[in-house]
Length: 201
Ligand code: 5GP
Image 1 (tube, rainbow, N blue to C red):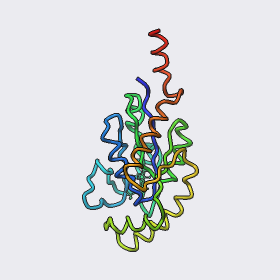
Image 2: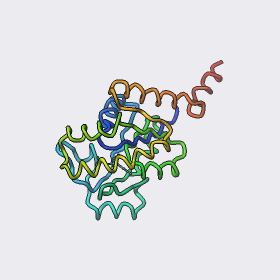
Image 3: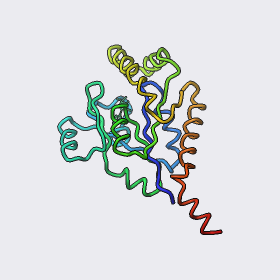
Image 4: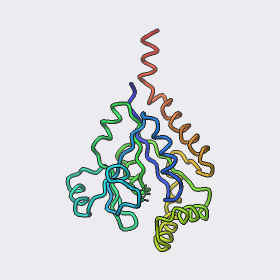
């Protein structure tokens, strides 16, 4: 069995990243790494499922104990990837998905050179704002902050390996699956498949 991929996905909020990843995660070959955050849960979010919702004090303690693969401050809150389980899951052949913002992604680029980086783009910034408003979970002030944040983040897209444009959801999911398939078929990731064919010759 080949080692699973480490797939880092970034997108400004409102790009539909959650919906795309929700579809991908229906396949149990994928494992979603649940991040820790100091922000408050939104309606419907569950502790341990969407995030580990923890205090700033607890978060800083985890940083000190080197328990985070990476972390970043985003819109006034800490967000971080717990180290635990990532390697374990990959060794079990699972493709591990990290859904993180750009600063954290660039740190993972340094720490894990074999990770795959995917940026999900909205069709336009206007459409992104429209989707944020439709979601109705944030105040006007927070939406304005997120849109301005998004503009800055979009500039990072070119530092990723792949882009997926979420114009039509079905197409975006299909493109995302195509990226994963291409990565799985890379010679560097398929060594065991090649060996098996050679040994059974
Ligand atoms: P939200 O508050 O909308 O759930 O997330 C805000 C941003 O934080 C998103 O861009 C999301 O991808 C990012 N994020 C979530 N978890 C992590 C994490 O563990 N590390 C980093 N660096 N960013 C994260």
